[in-house]
Image 1 (cartoon, one colour):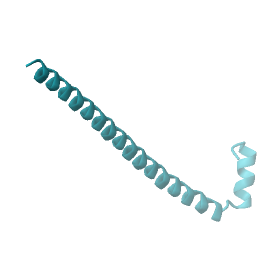
Image 2 (cartoon, rainbow, N blue to C red; image 1 turned 60 degrees about the horizontal axis):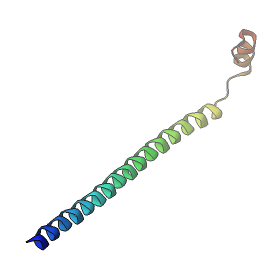
Image 3 (cartoon, rainbow, N blue to C red; image 1 turned 180 degrees about the vertical axis):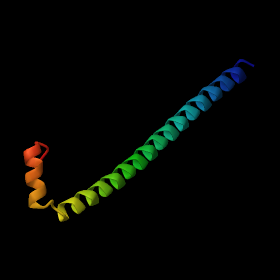
Image 4 (cartoon, helix red, strand yellow; image 1 turned 45 degrees about the vertical axis):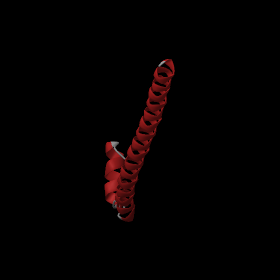
Length: 75
């Protein structure tokens, strides 16, 4: 009977270890997935900002506007 109790305890221990390892893998996978989504969001936002900056660069202000800003101190 003692052997059966020992085997049962060992089986419970192995099961608990396997469950813990599985949980760690699931958490790591979730974190990696979350990071990938966040990186993709940041990349999309950076691309949109880049397009805005290209639009601004394509249409520089007129000389009179620049002079006005320089006089006001907000260039």
